[in-house]
Image (cartoon, rainbow, N blue to C red; front, side, top):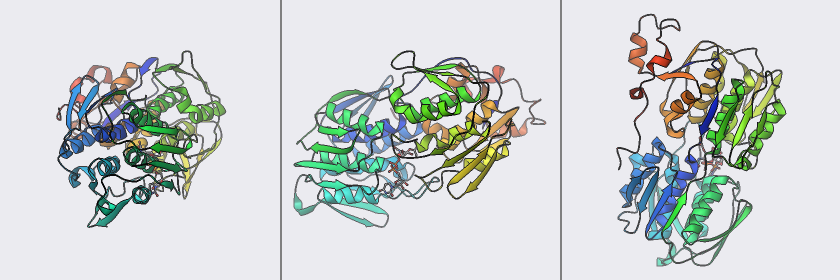
Length: 455
Ligand code: EPU
């Protein structure tokens, strides 16, 4: 559990890690390379560790060098991703396109839904079929082969019914090694798609139009070694902007790409909170003693990111006036509402729309993290709440925020991770009797490096 003592002002600078959602797809993309690739600025996260385990099962040699991972995919030994790993991580479906392009066959279990929604893979499958794959789904397994005994996929014109990030990435990776030109229309424009295109180009792929809704890929016979640095995590950066705003603290973040946060910064500004960029890769949030509610609708990039919906909602719970938040991307991504209400927020749900009435303050409470971004929402709410907030379900948080507790502690926050048994057995487990967090923040309370077991 994570115990947070709220109402402590934050101060200083925080370093933003490499983007989780870029790192995951880039790691899968390393399967395309006939040699070895080096990826720098890879965050140390449980999800990264899981995808590395899948790569190892496929025959990739993975070695760690500081914050870099060296991935040698020259001799792939299997085309089948193990169910026990894929079932833990939806992003593992990213290996389908690269495996198919490299080996002519991919056998990947259906990743299934998750707590935020059903998350089908029909758009990935349709795209791969258009590139010449025969795809059968049997007994929960996606079996994909290149049709007609051909060695390479064939370029095609693909229209996506929805600009799915994962489908765009999977199809783009498969198309890098296809014969001829592929055109993806209504493609996702997220920065992670652009990061993947940059990495593929570093390996010799011929891609243009990434960052727009029309991506063109000219297939090449093979991709070569590359050394590439993962882009900074825009969602982690946005979460720290909220942490500063909700605690009325001035904090600085770097490295960041401000253009990746345009919608979040615009909505902060609309609420009366300024964010300035003193240097090209740096942002500073300027606190406001009070701020207003605003309406938010989650949309594909460059619209407001669904991954920031939950943390931003925490901020709006203590804004002046009302806000309306519509979640349009995932059908079950408002589970934090009930938990925020436990902390004194006033939020009413109507389907996928949350109506937030600003309250003067939040108060610490025991709460349950239901998914990754809901966990982040509860952390920032806990930082602003009166008294102690106890968050359970931390495995979600560990999937997506590198060294979050250390980073917050570096800014002055008071928090500590404790084992549930310790906390429950503490006599009169109340705010008054829990020892000072400043004295208790021993490193054994933080999770060990998830990658250390692997390499
Ligand atoms: N969709 C389909 N069919 C498909 C693919 C998607 O119907 O074949 C639907 C989904 O069910 C969803 C919508 O399209 O309703 C958007 O899904 P998308 O494919 O764009 O998302 P994703 O690739 O599954 C990535 C991130 C998510 C992030 C979304 C949207 C990774 C590993 N995950 O998911 O990140 O929310 O894009 O930006 O890149 C997170 O980090 O917490 C997270 C969930």
